[in-house]
Length: 93
Picture 1 (cartoon, helix red, strand yellow):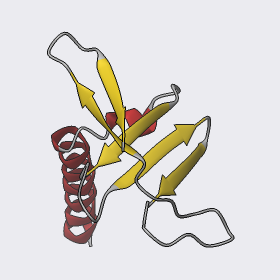
Picture 2: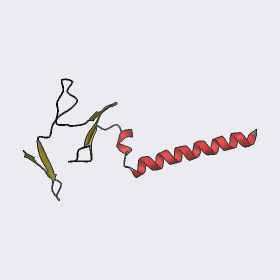
Picture 3: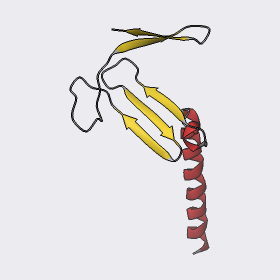
Picture 4: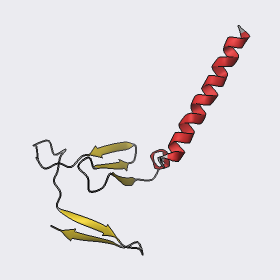
C-alpha cells in the first residue's frame, strides 16, 4: 500500500512541474500577477483574440465583421504598428 501512495506523490509532483513548465514556456505568468494587462493573440489574423485582465476578472474579446446587439463582437477599424524604439502608431482605415 505504501508503494501506491508513493506513486501518487510522484505523479502529483510531476503534474505540478509540468504546469509550471507550460506556464513559463508560453509566457502566461501575467495571469498570476496582481497587475492589469492586455494581450493580443494572433494579431491581424482572422482568429485574433484580445485578452484583458482587470483585477480578478479576465475578459476575452474576438473581433469579427458582423456586429450583434450583445457587444461581444467588433470590426477592424485600423492598424497599429510598434516601432523599434517602442512607440506605437495607429493608422485608421
